[in-house]
Length: 109
Image (cartoon, rainbow, N blue to C red; front, side, top):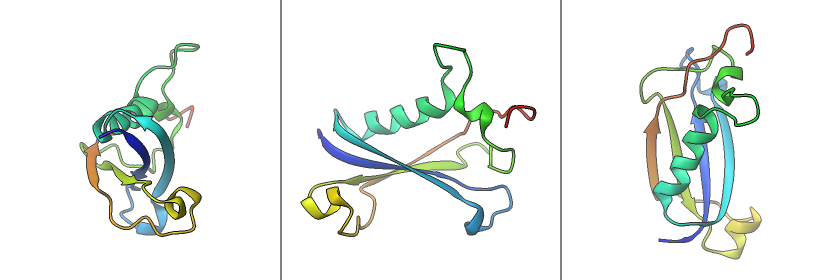
């Protein structure tokens, strides 16, 4: 299913407190499928950057969980003008995929 998606990366804290959870939203205008959009998000955090061979995950605080499958990407369809503009609630995710945030670097985070 191709289309416009919102992918919400949910990065829980090791404290387990919901108030400490980090959430990052990414919009895709033409991802091939929901799973492709999810793979892009996971790669954004965990794959090395071609410029300096560093990973975004290395710069994220150690207060964010690195537990196996401890993070998730929730995917929502942006299938109405209101959702696309942010004026209509997204509703429930159409897909939620757990993933593991890569190791941090205590000196860089």
